[in-house]
Amino acid sequence: MNAPPDPAQWTCPLPLRDYPEIVLGHGGGGQLSAELVEHLFVPAFGNAALSDLGDAAVVDVPPGRLVLTTDSFVVRPLFFPGGDIGSLAVHGTVNDLAMRGARPLYLTAGFILEEGLSLETLGRIVHSMAAAARLASVQIVAGDTKVVERGHGDGVYINTAGVGVLAGGRVIGPAAAQVGDAVIVSGPIGDHGMAIMSVREGLTFESAIVSDSAALHDLVATMLATGGDVHVLRDPTRGGVAAALNEVARAARVSIELDEAALPVRADVRGACEILGLDPLLVANEGKLVACVAAGDADRVLAAMRRHPLGADAVRVGDVVAGPAGRVVVRTTFGARRVVPLPVGEQLPRIC
Image (cartoon, rainbow, N blue to C red; front, side, top):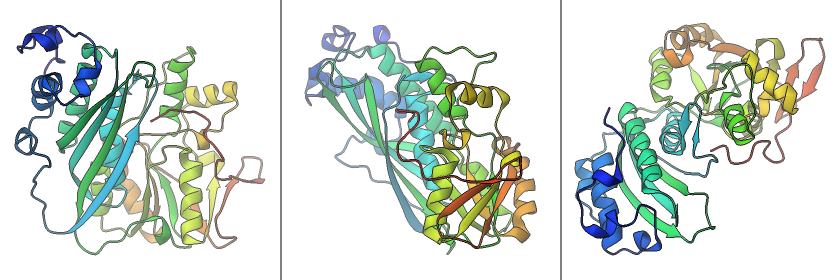
């Protein structure tokens, strides 16, 4: 892996070297903007479509249906255990495509930079983003940069768009859940949200809580390759598993029942949630998925997931059942049932 860009080593005209921090001129479309593109973004994201530097990228797309998504990333802090805003932007966009069963191909990236952001910090973020894109086998083929005045941003915000291709006639979406489906989670929940909280609030636990941020498209491809009937895939980001499953239950007009004892939560995350009064079901994830799979195929899909590094701890946590449309219920360890509502707001602001 290449070392992060070092502004002091960039060979470029004097104006860029004279500005170790972002200034308004970097977003003005003139010489400073051009130097930022030439000496940071193009070398980091370099590919033929981007290097052409046209007003839009021209790319090849395999046969199939196009899958499009867009997302924005405003996480604070910019760097956290297990990731940063750059890698998170790639993972989040790739995962949105993967949750429709698509193979991610291309991304775009728009950077909203705050005046005063150090070029070294921007270089670290861009380098991380480029490395994440390479690992996910996607190309960042177009982008844009704007600069806002000091005090009008938190260093950098990133907006992305993603393009993928979906072969065949498979339909995967929240409305496709069916009564009798098994509900599967790919691993322990709540890691990302609690990692962000621990850094933001300066909290110390017995062990470091690390974000689960990861690109899930290869895990999804492994699941689909089994031939199992996968009806729903969701990445439980903001609002956690609770929000994702409430959206599925409402879209498919079904009920979902979860087994509290089966829900995978790491001991340190569970302890942190108890201290802070948070429900792990409501805490964000950035490297986990929730699936609704035909009951007869669930064991086969689970076995394949567990052979994949990102699904090694996958577990069946509940079922899709007939009942009041849009309701999610947890069967507690005491034999009772509690309704899990769709969150009204967000427990952990600025987690992505």
